[in-house]
Length: 153
Ligand code: DCP
Image (tube, rainbow, N blue to C red):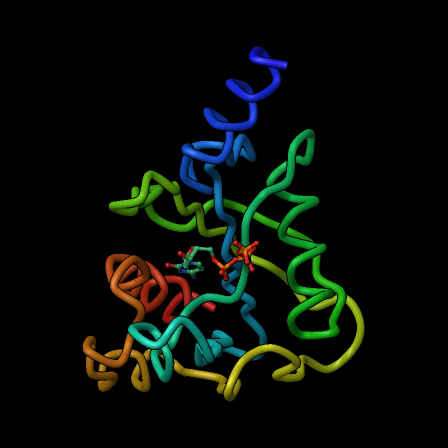
């Protein structure tokens, strides 16, 4: 009984983040179609709400980045994509999560804002005009490479 009490006490003393043994990787999709890239406006948390991001989410245990990207876009946008090459360099967040962006091609369906405030297609010129304050901080470094990708498209 003493042992059980100790177990319960140490488990509940730990924060939720320390007991989170999921992979630290987050994947984000640069869906490019007709010379434009799809950005999604975050609904949460408050500090990121209203800011544009490449849609995506956390990789699950045993899942490849490509599979996570396909799953997240299906869940968040209701569309089917195929994952492609990496975009830019991975970005490490202060909380230890590591973000990886990949190009993605639409296979089926029309993206819809199922979990975001809004979706918008951006040309390279639209991206250059975009105020970086309106972009999720971690995604800002990817904007120049996205412009190059769109200029080449
Ligand atoms: N993130 C980011 N830029 C992106 C995508 C994600 O900075 N283009 C960050 C925001 C969060 C973390 O990555 O800190 C996880 O993103 P989401 O909340 O979108 O992912 P999930 O829905 O998978 O997270 P959870 O399962 O924790 O709810």
